[in-house]
Each structure stands twice: as structure tokens, then as C-alpha cells.
Amino acid sequence: MKNIALALLTSLTLGFFALPATAHDDINPASKKVAGPNGGRVLTGTTPRAEFFVTGDRRVQITFLNGHGEAVAPAGQAVVVTAGDRAAPTRLTFVASGNTLVSDGTLPAGNLVPTVVQITPAPGATTVTSKFNVNLSTCGECQHAEYACTCEGH
Image (cartoon, rainbow, N blue to C red; front, side):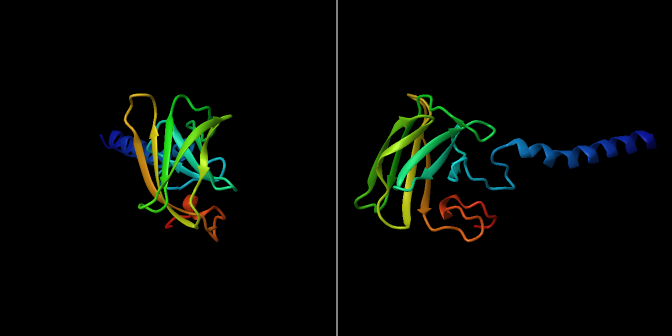
């Protein structure tokens, strides 16, 4: 009986320590924040996941990602971004450009822009909403824009 209990305890212990090693295949494990392939913020509320990235000319680029964090072509998703002052918000719609969706306009001026991203995965599906501040300042540690910072505790 002791041998069976010892074998069971050993198996459970080895299985417990093996779990974190398999979690690295996930694009956004709970213990580590990651940036998307373009250095943007990964939105995890949608399937497939989406990267929110601000280009050099302040346009928003949305890239959908597979389970390995690689870009996949948009497949009927609709995206709307509302940003800036609540009294006079800027509403951005998107057009396909290769494997991404690019906004028809630019984010309002400033380094800190309140933003609401609405993604409808398919016609008639429930819209997923993400709200955050797009802080365009550069993080001193990870060198990503603050809105896509991968540092723990930020």
C-alpha cells in the first residue's frame, strides 16, 4: 500500500511541475504579457485574438492572430474604434489591407487617448468591447509603447 501511495504522490508531483512547461505554447499565458507581432497590444477577448497597433501616422492597425501569435487574414470581422474626448469622439472604421485591417482615419492628437475597440467576429455575432487608454509614450524597460507594454506590474 505504501508503494502505491508513493507512486501516486510521485506522479502527481511530476505532473504538477510539468504544467508550466506546456503553457509556453499559448500566445498569452496568464503569467506573462506579450506584444503582438507588430509590437502592439494583444486583445484576448476575441476569437481569434487581435493585435491593436498604432502606426507611425497614428492609424490603427488590427491584426488577427492564430494560437501561435502569427497573423491570419481577416475573415468577416467588423471593427470600430472610438477614441478621444467623449464630447467629440473620433470614430474609426476599417478596410482590409493584406492580412490586416487599417483604420480610415487617425487617432486624435495627444499621447494619452481613451479608446474603445469593438470587434464583431461575424455578422450577427455578439460584439466584444475592449476599453483602455492608448498611451503612446515609450516604456523605458521593454521599449514598446505603454499601451502595449509587456512589463509585469505596468
